[in-house]
Image (cartoon, rainbow over all chains, first blue to last red; front, side, top):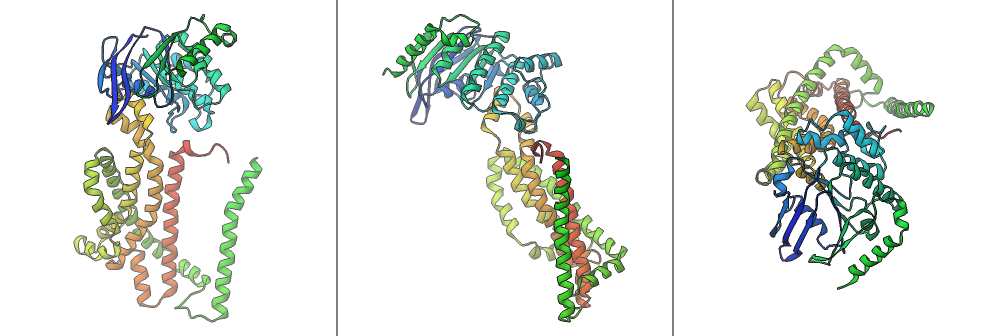
Length: 250
Length: 258
């Protein structure tokens, strides 16, 4: 399931500090959009406003025509943070099932569905492990399993692979693509890494320094499914260079 | 691996036991060598004989004290946790009441004990209240902290799923508070016995506090030591019980392998 996201003329200030400056963005159903920009440019705040966790100073967010707060009780929204945020007292499978418990959703809680998502993320056999027994990469994959299991229409990912090492990050990128191709949610993905953004996305939104506003949007016309070979393509490198130029301007 | 584990356990139990035997031997030798009178410091052998001699009598009084302590402990901790849950959800109430809770906490239980006996009588009730009062605060303080210090992002996760306050409490705050809670409960076990004995000092005809007081009037120092040993062992047993429960409940915290 997926939806369209419309952000209209969004502005946010914390006291006298303006963090978002007239941001407008439309994301199509099933689209993968990344946001890159310097630290403190309001990317995280934008994600939190879209998720209904923070109220904007002015402007509107619509998810298929309804507000985030109206949408989230239906399980439309999924957050993935930089930390995996697994509950230490729950075993892996119990952590993955947590959203279904909160949403009181019994349709999605069949053992088959859980087994499928765990298998897609390479977590079969670890159902009974406690988070502290898992590596950082596995914990983040468990966080992905937790969010994909309830199939949110819109996934908001805030630098989800920012805290893992380079090799794990690359693996997690392809895992994410694989799972996304299976469930086809709309994804808004915040990252510091231009390479990561180009590899994953249909479009890359380049943010200016604070107060953040959209500086440019780069459309990525690389074939899907993307694979490690994508990283070798000249077009890929051109896009990375192009985006890097955009970030420097101003 | 297994053999090392057994070896470790033998060392864990054996080492303190060896120290105990050595300490008692020195004590015994010193008392005999300097001919210290029995009413000042009885040797370990005399205390041991006194315990054997009293047997059921000592056990009965120990049971009374432990019952008072455990009842006060249980009631106080349930109450403290309930109030902590309210505090965790209402900073207003916490701000208004917390200073008084701290003031009451810093009031020595010894100062309140005569009042408690006056209000609740010389029977078991005044001791339950004393034990409860003293074991109340560690749990109140720690449970409030444990219910409140939850991960910001975990709260965001729950909010993004439109979780109710009750779900946040049940699935996040409560399990998060358990490690804090147990460290307070362990402190409270010994405190509750202190409370019960202080209550017995003021006015009672049963319990270890009564036994200690009566023995001191008659200069029956070995009997006094026997009661002290019983109080100490009771405290250790109570502490051990809570530690055991903690291990059973907080399985996720236990290291994978030693």
